[in-house]
Length: 246
Image (cartoon, rainbow, N blue to C red):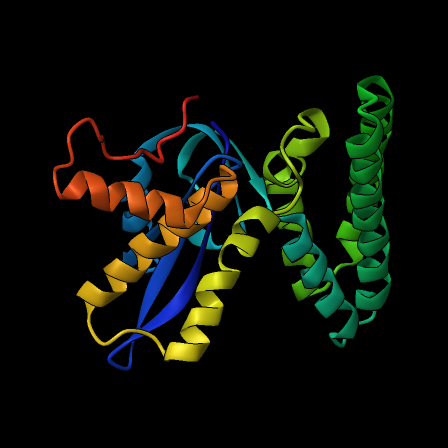
């Protein structure tokens, strides 16, 4: 199945650790980790993943073996927003050009979400890919260092930035994972983090139950109640499962 991945810092006794989230529409798994590296990704998903992975543009995801990747277009938009404010002869114009194109992409994706007109979406997508190619080639010779890096990134990772153009069932952003982290971020701000890795892992497990129950439109209280009844060995009561059927 497609999966969205993100990570956020988590203090443990004053040391920066990392809380990862792996999620889609049916589950939300949190992982307490001490790194932001590839090892955490591979420990959770394996050395390769047989689905589409949506993420931000953190380097740890580059080269990871998957069916396909969709990098978050909202992050790309922020890169071009920063470019507009970066000194350089053509930076403002290049930034504005690609901001306009990215906004067009988001706009047409929202239209597809509302009307599900796949043919109309595909016609637009073909024309849009031509626009991206033309704009990239036009500005490549004029781009300075920062703009040049962005344009090379667009060209080299085109299939990862624009996967949703041919597969609109995959969103162009990583909002699902980012929204999933909000409860965790709120808890982190209130608690200041965890006092031990063991407590950190318990927090990750608790967040997994809460957010997965929300995904599956199930009562968190009911889940814990059934779990406790099964724990004490009540006859005919099995442990409830959060594992979805794919």
